[in-house]
Length: 68
Image 1 (cartoon, helix red, strand yellow):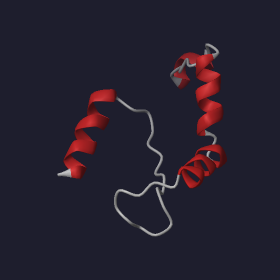
Image 2 (cartoon, rainbow, N blue to C red; image 1 turned 180 degrees about the vertical axis):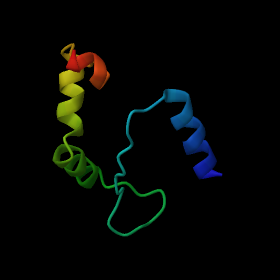
Image 3 (cartoon, one colour; image 1 turned 90 degrees about the vertical axis):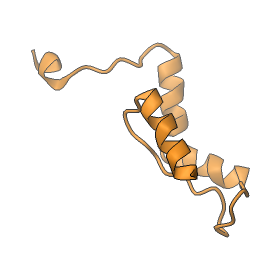
Image 4 (cartoon, rainbow, N blue to C red; image 1 turned 30 degrees about the vertical axis):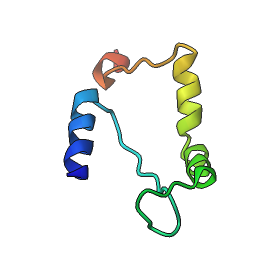
């Protein structure tokens, strides 16, 4: 059921990529270690990507168009 909800959410948002984040080191459902999650987001460059998009640079160009 959880996977179906996740997939429905992903398909409705048209993501370009998905990053897997470990919520806690103990593999316990419903437990989130905020410091661990933040550390992963920082190390993966997700937060920097969000900052860049907020500054107005979220454009994606197809390689063929860029090449011209």
